[in-house]
Image (tube, rainbow, N blue to C red; front, top):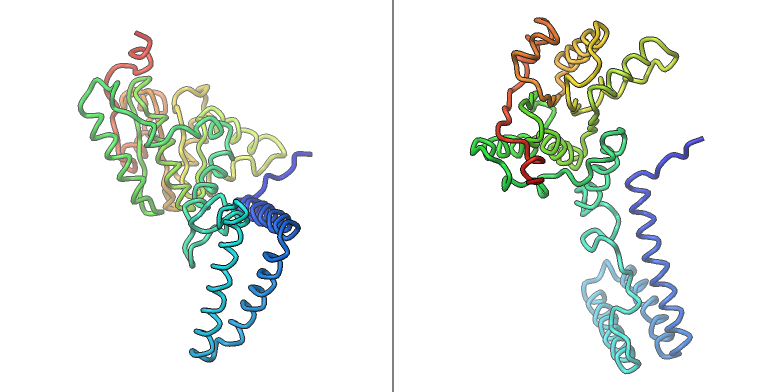
Length: 305
């Protein structure tokens, strides 16, 4: 049986507990080394409790705070004489912004958003290979057409302002122009905002739809209908059949009615898509998707030369 992978908050909790345990172990070593530090730490613990009791009195609170600060200074001085830095036994949290809690006040920390993005992307077979396909790793250096700058800005704008009202994108053009890379980059940003993103190849998606239709795995295609953002990669590379056309049309119709954004990438131009999938699906693509045309020479071939 496959074990469930830890949630993002469970990962953060494990990081935090590890940092706290390592700090506690260092403190224990200091107490063994120095009885003076041990006694100071005992006083610091009592001072912390006294601050809670003094919360109703500003004068008392100020007195206790000054006492606590002086104890910390004394502790730091002892540590220095023994060759240790002041923060020797302070917890070394992975994220210094939220101390591995995942939240800054009531807002999600960037570290939690990143973990959620990684988790969502790993839910699909194709997603596991796209961890490095982000806007930061996309370059225009090998693009041979100036219009690709506008394409990049279009995808960035869509990602930065992504919401459930963002509408749909159709990324089309020749091979090796960056469609998969930019579709993945958008998916990373959306997932980082907390949206449930599914990124899958058209071939795998049709296979899951077939399982749902003809086997006991009735929910094999459920994620494609319910996710906040669906990215269908390489449309047109799947095996052509009446079932494939019907499944794709039904899925896209369902997401349009539900108002859920979809991104499709394909190596085919609009005329070819019309021939492959017929008027019904083509009309959905033409009427409900914003076309984004990728032009230029295959980047992979340019890099080889």
